[in-house]
Amino acid sequence: MRDVLDRIGDKWSVLVIVELASGPRRFRQLQRAIDGISQRMLTLTVRRLERDGLVRRTVYPTVPARVDYRLTETGASLTHLVRALTDWSLQHRTIIAQARQDYDSEHPDHEIR
Image (tube, rainbow, N blue to C red; front, side):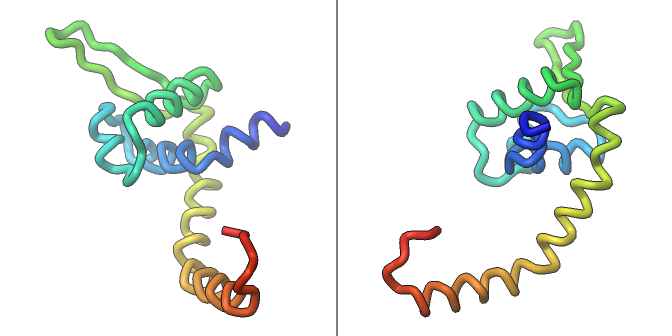
């Protein structure tokens, strides 16, 4: 169970799944949509999700080759959970940011970040 949760709980995997929930995307579309992800990290993330059977990579026989990524049926079945987590995060981010500021003020010497 832990290995599956580690993959699904990875911040980049969640963001890729959220983006692919809207439909197939090309690599550059994913990279532009996911703020802060490097090309290498996106490559690793989609490969891992593909290996886990959550993402399907399709190469089209064109010149130059066109590649897109889409959720598999298993990956799509995860989207309602990931969206719920995303919605919760957006709804509570201000509260969490304030709690962090309060904690940091009360514990100025801590190294928790």
